Length: 522
Image 1 (cartoon, rainbow, N blue to C red):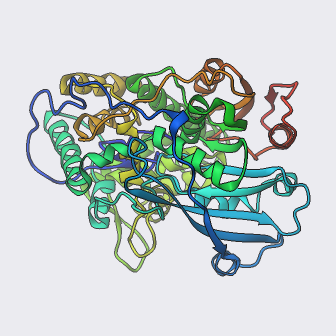
Image 2 (spheres, one colour):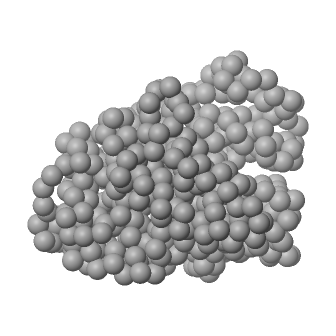
């Protein structure tokens, strides 16, 4: 998952952690919309030198439960599950607490333990407890010999308590299927009203406490977790938005950095507008690469012009949602078409399925596109969703104090529509989300992490969600950052190739900075 703004108001927002939304509510916003911030200064952040001692980490053996879920595996792993209580507001350390869900995986018979390796999958809104269930069985053996893998659900996410939940499953179904493109003033007014409706729903539920679910506080939570695990310094693997979180940790706690791997790095030098355009450009380029590869094969299921085929399917879904083969009678509306396409661009291995899904949709069957969309929104077979949407919005909006008027956003949509026909307008309209969000802001600091030990930043040359230039910028901004480049396609690099794995493993285990800073595609 990556740090992407919910598209089409939230229409690709879950897709990009993200999730696309649009709801069918009427009304017209004021010309300027609701401002994202007031003129008052941002809240004063707590002094990191005076944070409370960490609470005890309460873990119990849950190996049997994990095996029941995943089935038996060749690699023998012992599992522990539990919670860590951290302050909701570090400015009031003796006040209310948040319980973070934590899962620890340890190789049975582990002999060369270095310490704990903390994991974050991105988002914001991604579940670290979910990710570690997968990584424990696919990471290189040397990593499992050296580290306990520790996944945690960040504050407000998934199994952590409280999880931010303010949008119903039924409403999310409606949002994800709704029109992702702003094509006229009426559709812009509708999307602005949707953003305001969601902001009101969440603020009504949580009030100004929404602002406390932010990256700065999650970085503080990570240090509490490091301390509770008994490690003097942090070893960390963060993907996508997890690189924002990891670099923020390094800025706040440079002396506590042992080894940070920041894979698919975000760009710390860009504002919201520039980051949004970079993402639109990245996904448009990724689709074009998919289309060229598919057509070159000579038997592309998506037709001779895959982009036009997608545009035709979008038009067809506007007229009547596409049926699926499921017994529940589910249909695929226009928003799900675009979300399904976008979800497949994260990984080149998904391109063949994308081609088949587009071809099937062109023939009137939306089943495969629905399956692809569900992978990114998290929709379950029973129709329920995780809280990725709410968590993504809460953190993204708390982390920035950028402001945009409706006129600026409307012009930006038209600008990106012309440059990126498939993804430009939906991704540009995501700026509406935080323009209506009601909660105190805690903008991210500049991050040079002065004094930290060497930090590995990984960039993939053709990453659609976090373009390669972001990794270059992050490695440059961090005083001790160094860049490892993968000449590949898709989002994230580790542990996809032997070259990348060897470099990352040597760094994490022995703190070796690689002599060769690039890896080939294979």
